[in-house]
Image (cartoon, rainbow, N blue to C red; front, side):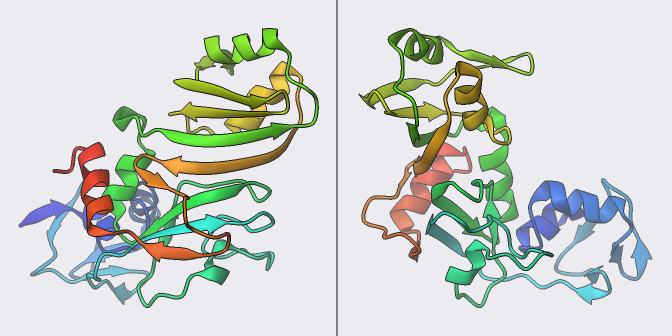
Length: 234
């Protein structure tokens, strides 16, 4: 069956769909020895597809949930030699993180070699909710909590949590769909607060409950089925 090559690459665990599109655009992908362009199709069961000269092969799909600690990068590797979340993960398959958490943030990270699922989680149209617990240095004013609930404009777009729960004047829990870089810290900075701790406790139906820091586990069949349902893959 013919499929777009970027989808095949993502499905083979090369990287996310967007990164695979970049590989094609940069001239790193060939089908049966010929350079291809973005949008070209191939049959993974018949054609020889190579990336940087190496033939791809389909791997067993793996879905891993990691509880990231602070001071680790959300990356497969780092050119500066800094520690990454891959220091905690020991699997045969080549997995990559879906989305990211800042180096000084902690909590749930999903890693997989399923590029299609990763692409859907990252895409705003699927509205995947994530829950964060945020601690700030200064005590939150009631007026600023109301501003947070009503939405804060960042670069011309409103960031409005779907839920806000105040634990105390220095700690708030928010549910949000937004995925822009550093967006939560930027929201609180605009309101006049310095974030001292950011902990992601949930991604869609996936929870950090029972998962110790630095630990990881594979998703259960029930969790994966529920996640696919969230992503309209069933």
